Every structure is written in C-alpha cells, then in structure tokens.
View 1 (cartoon, one colour):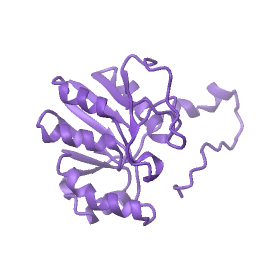
View 2 (cartoon, rainbow, N blue to C red):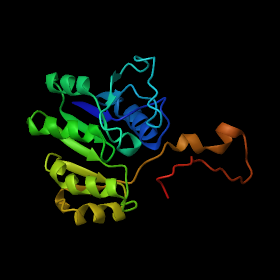
View 3 (tube, helix red, strand yellow):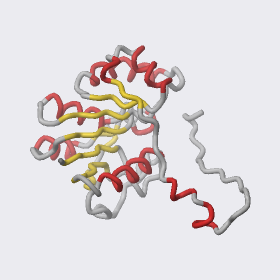
View 4 (spheres, helix red, strand yellow):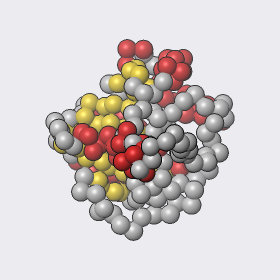
Length: 208
C-alpha cells in the first residue's frame, strides 16, 4: 500500500499540522510506503521560500504561487506542478489531504474525481470565528467533501460543525490528534524527577 500526504507546507516550517504529519509519517513508514507532497513555502506571512528542496527522502516539494493574495494565511496559494505530478501518478492507493481550506484539499478531491485514489480529508480545524473568509470556505466545503471517502474531525465539536455544513455523518470519523509521548518524558529528556510545569505553544492571531 502506498499513502500520499498532501500538506500545504512542511518542516522546517513551524506549525501544528507540520509536526503532526511528520510524527504520523514516521510511524506509518514502518509498515507501508509513504510520501509527502508539499510546497516550497516556509511561511505564509511573507511567503519566504525554502532553498533546500530534498531534505527528506520521502518528501517532494513543489513550487507554489500566491494566486489570490487578498486571501489571508496562504489560502490563495496553489501549485500547478504538484497538480501535474498528482495527475501523472498511478501508483497511489490513498491520498490523505491536510488543512481545511487549502489547495491540498482541492488537489486531493480532484484526484478522487478522476477515480484514481481513495481520499481522506483531515481538516485540523475547529469552527473558529465567523469571519467572511471562513463563511466563504464553509459554503464550498460540502462540495469538496463529495470527493472525500472519509473526513477526519479532531473533536466532537468539529464533527457536529461539519454535519451542520451538510456533510454526511457516515463520512465523518472523529480521531483526536495524537502526540509523541517520548517528547514529554521528563527524566530521559531533562533529568528531572520533581514536579515541573512546561508550556509549549506559539502566538497565533487566528487561534483562541
């Protein structure tokens, strides 16, 4: 079995989706063939691009462009070279698209439309705040969900929200995000036996 993950951007780009996919693929590669298609963009704030393109043997980075710069947070980014390679590939059994509203979901849906692969969509999202861009994407999500075999929600709240958008309940499966517990084994990592408090996070203006 060969699984292809479609991710808007990937490590060394900083973000929860990037870390999650990295950890997931490290586990999957022990049992199955796995690849990642992603863009060459380091961040969506200033669209800085990576100079190193072949840093992971299972990752293929494609040149991407901001076709709709008026959309926030890189939602207007698209990669024609990724689309071309995705159409060409005939050896993919399952496509796993990541990130709600980004071009990777559209590409995975298009490949499913061509009846070439099974398609799993993972939104990595929650209902969020009712901004105009959010409302626009909410209106087209049910259309693209038609070309998803399964939609992964990360919480019961998100599952109910996706249902409210018109997505069939039988397509939605709730799988909370996992973590690598080895990163938090305090003795092995820090040689600390006493209680301690660790904060891990980053500031994001669009997250609560």
